[in-house]
Image (cartoon, rainbow, N blue to C red; front, side, top):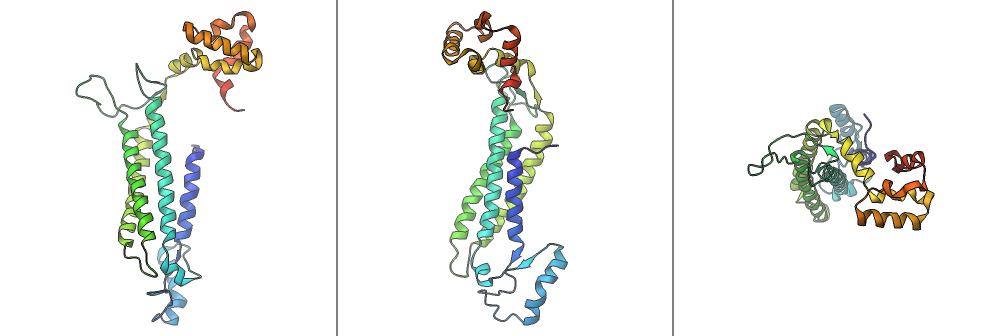
Amino acid sequence: MLMPHLLERDLKRLKAARDQLLTVPLGGTAIGTSLTATHEYLKNVIAELQNATLLPVKGCEDLIDGVQNTDEYVQLSGAYKSLAVDLSKMCNDLRLLGSGPQNGLGELNLPQRQAGSSIMPGKVNPVIPEFVTQTAYQVIGHDATITMTAEAGQLELNAFEPVMFFDLFDDARLLNGALQTLNENCLMGITVNVARCRQMVESSAEAATALSPLLGYETVSHLVKKALKEQRPIRELVGDRLTTAELDQALAPTAFFVK
């Protein structure tokens, strides 16, 4: 299954943040000077950690910098936030495209997961996209907290790391759950309302933009205004200016995609 380019970028950001987290200031002790750490400890601790975790962990080149700063956690939080924003935007699009059936776009049919109203019979809310968006807001709020806790560090001490770690672990849990339920309870069950999409394209005056190369901007502009004023399909107003084959080709839905 192909992954949208948007999520591919999110995955790259998460992998970059993960790689940064594999560099640890272990052995720096309290202020990065390795004071009280033995030579044997400094020589072997990273290798022991690699064996215990099976991860390509490596030590910091600058232990003082590694102890002082928590920018790697800010980077991870930023990657989580970017994913949350992208998921929320995607879900807002799904809610809009699935709105209807009478007064919305109605291009997509979202799975009906629960009754949406005790007042309006038949009303179904897009609860899964709404859940994902709520999760995204929580992650975005965590990012603000993590940003400020990293900034609040003083010299080699950051007394606010506990809430930073709490929010980062919570972000991972929230996003994992959001992705799983979005996929299983929404994306896998979406269907396209083909008839509705075709009707909207064929009745859209704006679709006449595709006719500009054939008829010229001024002519098309006049036809669009006339179509909107008289509530008539643009196809009907073109008349004998184009053949049926030319009109079908120009207004075909596939003509609006970048080739």
